[in-house]
Each structure stands twice: as C-alpha cells, then as structure tokens.
Length: 260
Image (tube, rainbow, N blue to C red):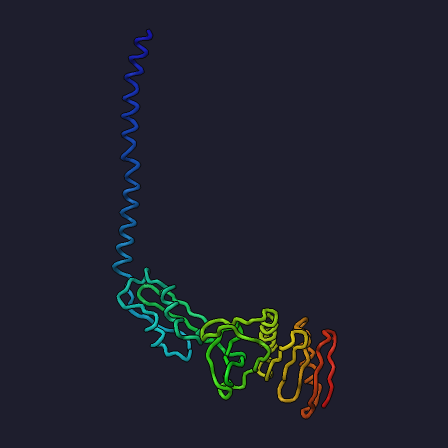
C-alpha cells in the first residue's frame, strides 16, 4: 500500500507542475498588451504633438519677441517633453524687471509664456548719488541716478550687501530689513505708498516718514502699524489743505498732531 501511494504521489507532482506551466502564458498576455499600449501612446505623442507656435502673454518692458526668443523653445520640438524649468530660467536671465514667468502647453501644438513685471516700490541710496530701485518683495531692479527714481520713496538707514540687479536685497541689519518690508507692504495695502517721500530707519525704535511735502510722521516702531496708518489717514483727512507739521504715531492707541 505504501508503494502504491508513493507511486501515485510521484505521478501527481508532474501533473501539478504541468498545470503551473499552463498558467504562465496567461499572465504574460496582459503585460504584453500593456507594453504595446504604452508604446503606441509614446509613439503618438512623439509623432503628433509638435510645437508649432510659441506665444508670449503679458505686457512688460521686454518685447514679446524677446521673451519668445529667450525661452529657446524651437518649432518642431516635442510639446510634451519641453523643459519648462530651463526655459523659465533662460527668460529670467538678464531681465531683472520680470516678476513672474510661467510656461504652459496648449494642445495640440502651442506653447504660451505668461509674464508679469516688477513694480518699483522704493529707492535705496548707493554710492555717488545713485539709487537702487527695489520692488516691495525686495528685488533689486536697476541702478539709477536721483533724477531717474521717479519720485519713489527713498529709504535711508539701511546698508546693502553686494547688491546686484535681479537679486534680492540683503541688508546688514536684519531687524531694520524686517521693519522696512513691513512698512512697504502695509503702505501698499493701505494705498498710501505713493504719498511717502522717504523712510528714515536709522534708528529702529525711532522710524520716521516724510508723508507728502506737508508732514513728518513719527512711527516709533512698526508695532500695530496697520492701526497707526489708520490714524495717519484720519488725522490728514481732518486737517486743512495748508496745515503742516508732525504727526506723532508712537503710541499705537492714539495720534497727535504738532503744527509747524
């Protein structure tokens, strides 16, 4: 009986192996079909999606033709495989006034380049009577003469380290730097930045503004600056057109006007 069982077991093993072998081709067929499908899609993408048109969208001081040429995207290039990051870097290179650049594919054959321009917000004194124009994000745009600042508010009391057009301002005193950007952003949000002639930040606890040609504004610090700006606007609205003097905002709870 034992011999017969061993004989049956030995006969059963090859049968099981044969059954496993039969399942092998069934598993390969879906994989083969998937491979063919991927190859077909890749072939279609390679053949059909070619760049035919490259367009620049947005108004800046740089011409649309210049932007398109700088991108370095050639007609006939594969639309799907264009290197957007490399194109954006090429567009930014040597064009400090560009604020944002994005490259988008529009099937079946178009590339659109969207650009926006930086807006100067302040002028920082440099050597020999020149000024660095800077936007509210801290990007240095260009070095100009005093006459070319266009009436932007001049900032004094901060020292730039290794300034360069297209780079972001790096100030020696980080506390003053933080205070400056708080002022610029709050003034922008309150629609009064154009009224500020200069910002004196020589003393971090005694910040002063020249507001229009009529008022000196003593901020003290930038604590509760939004509230202080609200007081400033209220005081100016109540004063006459010929009034001049000092508006004291050093106390965040109130404002005082000292006529001259």
